[in-house]
Image 1 (cartoon, rainbow, N blue to C red):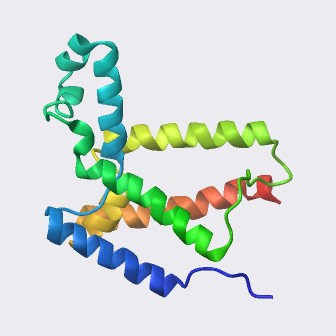
Image 2: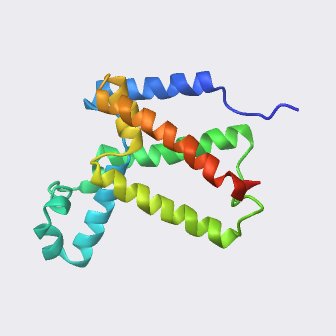
Length: 168
């Protein structure tokens, strides 16, 4: 029996049209990591405004009167809502932890959280996330976007080969 999924062609066209719309409407492409930096800056500012204001990195996110009205927040919320709608439309929504037989639930959660923190830190260190550089950069034919895309896929294949034993 064939598993019910979205057509990669339809999904790809939808992603391409969304990217085109962000360039046309906002003047720049997609990305998501800035939303998390903005949220962290607002959180730090609530706890210690002097400290947040003294840090150049955080202060730039606090320069607006209403930082949570930034388009990037709406993009991330829309990404969540759109993913949820797509999953619900296919009837595939469920709360579960995907893991292989060779790894416990706790190890899987810790590995996922550690990986998320590492990629989040790396994306801010690089001043952008994978969606920003691959989708927005490569679509503008930026050399850095294409180099990063190749490096990302190559490292993904290598990582998958190394960690495959945990999923079998």
